[in-house]
Image 1 (tube, rainbow, N blue to C red):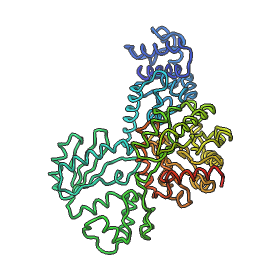
Image 2: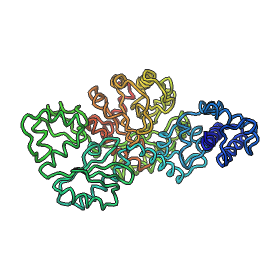
Image 3: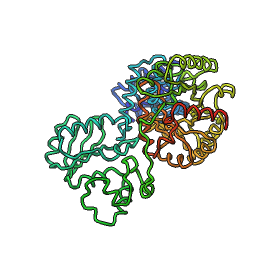
Image 4: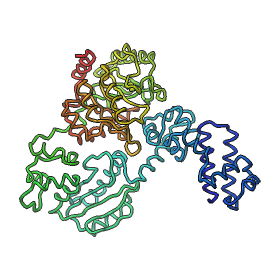
Amino acid sequence: MENKPIARTLRLLSQLMELNEVNPFKIKSIANAAFKVDKLPFPLAGKTVAELEKIDGIGKSLAAKIAELLETGTMAELQEMLAATPEGVVEMMGIKGIGPKKVAIIWKELGIENVGELYYACNENRLIEAKGFGLKTQEEIKKVIEFRMAGNGKFLYAQVEKEAKDLMEEIRGIFPDALKHIAGEFRRLDEIISELVIVIGSLNQQVAYDALAELDTLQNVVLNGTHISAELKNGLLVDIICVDKANYYYELFANTGTTDHVEKVLSRINTPLEQPETEEVIYQKAGLAWMQPELRDGITFIEKAAENKLPTLISYHDLKGTLHNHSTWSDGVNTLEEIALYCRDELKLQYLGICDHSKSAFYAKGLSIERVLQQQEEIDHLNKKITGFHIFKGIESDILNDGSLDYPEEILKKFDFIVASVHSNLKMQEDKATARLIKAIENPYTTILGHPTGRLLLSRKGYDIDYKKVIDACAANNVVIEINANPVRLDLDWRWHQYALDKGVMLSINPDAHRNSGFHDMHYGINVARKGGLNKEMCLNALSLDEISKVFETKKSGK
């Protein structure tokens, strides 16, 4: 074994010890030894324990550890430290800009146990509240994590939205007379993007290549037949397909839908397709109503298209209010009044549902019973002060390990509505997670089930649940299911929206905003809601103020 791996192992051991608050003198001794071992001009392999003891900076105790490492490939003490530390916390120590002391704060004070949760906490602005952190450190950590996430070749839709639209603007400027459109995952509004596909019609491939190769936006531009391959500066792959104008709409269709969708549509066409003048012609020849690009993920909506029963998809302008949001009362950035005025004056909404964290969320300044009552007094005051707008008294109540909510009944009944969410003990088997959610759903005070699986896209899978049992329970108990619009969550997954809607379960597009800019995440919630086939009639926060007030009153009355 070379000295560098030995030094790395000793360094890791010292960091884990620091993380777990072992004797600081021991930590310093091991860290010092790691530094000196790395600089030795000779290898340690083959040395006896007695020889190792004589080396400056090692000594008797560390000599035995190094000998154990050389013989077995590990150290018992290291394994003990690893066993005492969540795997995700160990991974966090590899993030540039945060050492063991900061990781310890993140883990033990903020309750964050992996990189995905850390990224989400940066989005929620939670790190700046912790000792030793500030806005600059938080932003640096967020950038490092985004770079790591991009390393697998996949990106959140929100991460590449601006770059994709900027590239299209450049292409429009270069080829103003050509037909051109984004296709593929981005056009389908997929939550995760692995490639940006663009179809251009009526161009000479070589002319297009020469022009695109000059763009600063693109790197590693390669011409391959009708395809121009490249990548954006952030590493996202780009495939630009140049075709004759006559074939443009067929290629746009073929490169927009998933393979099974395209094959299913084409299998319904019995006459020669020739060169369709629009995508609508293709669907018409297949005996189908025109299908929005976001519905072309699989074959779920093809039968509805055949029966001319496609839903009228919800749009951003259908939203009348926003639910599940956080203020300075817990871990939000803006005051209640700032949020209310922003929603009224900038977003032109009718109402706000404030849902600060409940008392179990100590890491997010969760509200004690006393603070709940104080906040509700402020809401009453603001509702008298601010005209043409209403603030509903809500809470994001933690679903405890046994499925109960973390306030007594006399407090729960004081809220206008309650979002019930799991934030702790996420490592559950499917039956445990399902039972936990169903018990919370059966609580008569639960209005909305928040982010049902706890997933964080590209970083945390989330706990498995029996979706049908959970959705059926919501149907039986008149509980709405949240589409958490934060682009890292987008949970409930759109693939289950139709099942919920068929069961009569309403959905709510909630931004889970922790600052005023976070309200714009409803845009991403709309994207996946459209993919799932949601219409405005089945969206809770598309109801008017009067309508949603009646919904809340009916729920509270138990009718």
